Amino acid sequence: MDCLFCKIINREIPADIVHEDDEVLAFNDINPQAPTHVVIVPKRHIATLNDIEEDDLALVGRLQYTAARLAKERGFADDGYRVVMNCNDQGGQTVYHIHMHLMGGRRFTWPAG
Ligand code: AMP
Ligand code: ZN
View (spheres, rainbow, N blue to C red):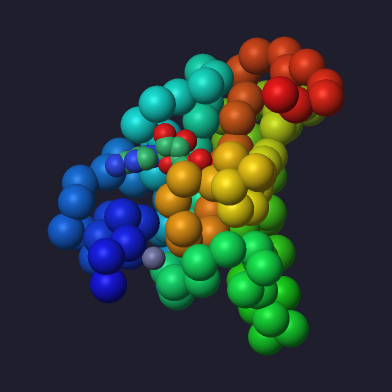
């Protein structure tokens, strides 16, 4: 399958991996928008948030749980951080394999751009 994140998961393309378990892989974003900017992806290919089904709820929860764990490990959980999932064109999605952005280590503004 011609999917960038599947290729990273399958080790066909290198990435700076920061966490891995049976279901999830997390790696540093190649174009970081914060001192910490990690992309957290399910190992199973799901194209967009719109494709999530009831059976995937635990998997999506694991993305969130992984984000919070990494934030704690890196010491900015209490200060605060941002998690984002972009969906489709207007949401700013560029890689069509669902992923959660974890950004931390600076102050974020709201609303997002
Ligand atoms: P999105 O725009 O929400 O689909 O996010 C895709 C993210 O993947 C962007 O923040 C990109 O900088 C990041 N990205 C693209 N290619 C790579 C790569 N080879 N390794 C790590 N991150 C990447
Ligand atoms: Zn994929």
